[in-house]
Image 1 (cartoon, helix red, strand yellow):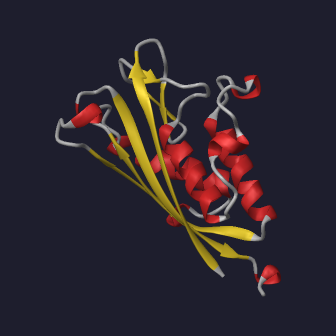
Image 2 (cartoon, rainbow, N blue to C red):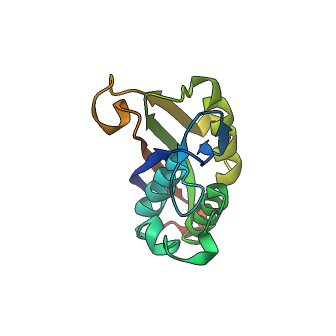
Image 3 (cartoon, rainbow, N blue to C red):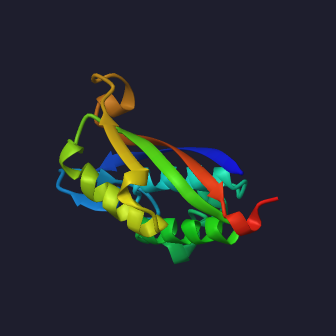
Length: 163
């Protein structure tokens, strides 16, 4: 059995925060605002994986007001989600994601993002694809007010769990 999931997340860009996307600390004059490290890409991926397994969303598992998740590295959240997926009898088949922002430029960082995500999901980097695009200066991302990310994933049932 295979299942498909979709995730979406948005975080505002603000001064005084690090800009961490895909587990990579990117040099930029603004960072992403949020309860955790606000890694918009990893949050979208977590939601896609959780959705594929019919396990709700990231807010259900890691509530934004919970002090345990204040400032947490979102790679830890992704590792926990990957563990949940495995416990349900699934492996990650592939993840394809797009980050939407005018700045910072992400192309120099996507390979490292793929490495982090593959490691955290216990898959090969060939199963992870990260793209970046702009909105041609339109909307909140185009004005540099925030960053958005979308992710889709395929999860595959372990042979021992097959019906």
